Length: 253
Image (cartoon, helix red, strand yellow):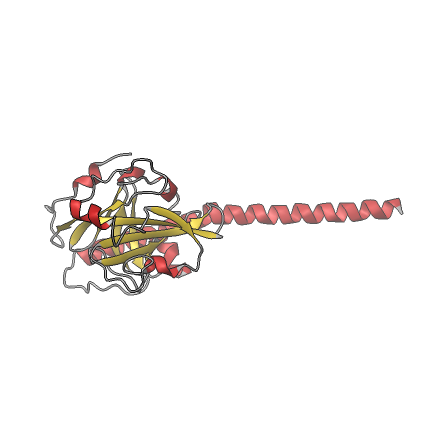
């Protein structure tokens, strides 16, 4: 009888060890190998973007999976830049951050919303939780540099507002008063994609950038949402080398 108990314990122990090994292999795949694969696809997206921009005659409307813009977040270092692709399915997000198709384009009034992974698959949005009020997020398109500033984050005792115009500050006390710089919600909360986030019937009078990613870091139980407001739109000429770049790109953490 005792031998039978020991045998069962051994079997159970081996099963647990096997399960642990499988989980470790999966974690390695998610955290490392998908980063390698995603890095190659992101590099291809960057090359495709350069090629498109050097030929102004090519269409400006991207197809699903195609890169159409670049994102820079100076607070994350001058080497942080990702090509943004059209679409948010798994294949799209493996290439880089992806635009929700039903949302606006960069520089337009309304909500330009972008999803990105936080762990594995390039993890472009790994550090979103460290963004602070007024941090710059710069989006470069074929025709413009668009600078957004993170809106006040709940819990800030005296949030900065000097990065916004006086008119925009007034709107934060009115129609945009409910829009926070960072908050946590459930995965099915599509209202964050509304032209005025979480107000489906409102008419947008400002350009908003929304970033979405999984939360907590190693779970998809919730979603972290970042909202930023457009503060500058610098036109650029496709293919030119003397376009003026936004000063926000020189900011550091």
